[in-house]
Length: 174
Image (tube, rainbow, N blue to C red):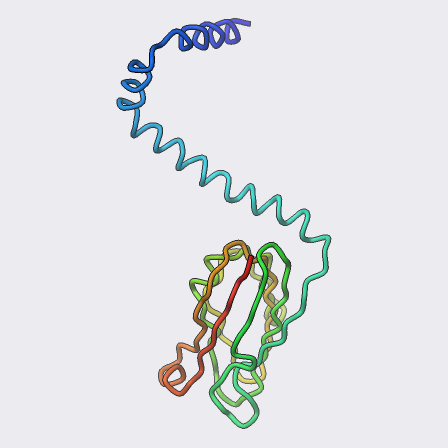
């Protein structure tokens, strides 16, 4: 009960402050307020992702197949333009039918999504992913939910592959 009384007393006293007093208090505590807002944002982001996971795990993921290269060893993504909607669940099914190793690199895209999981072989990875390496004949599955709209670059970061045209674009719409 003492805590409640103290809180009540603080609230009542704060109501009697004049506007210049509030401005002075806010000015003095600007750093503290900024830190509190930042901490609130940091705490809210995982909470939002956790909330998303509960609702979105109930809906089926839209499957999108993507090939990194082809059997003729052409350096390209097929398709090279991917389009997603914010808030929907997707499953990228990546495969590498070529004789060469390739990377699926889309850092800015990865920063704008919530990754549920990445599965490659018998290994399941959770958390932030910025690049996937697919060796010849390899396959991987990336399940995610876009959170932020925008247009993002896609490329293979193996020397010479980007320059040879192994690039693409990922668009996330609201």
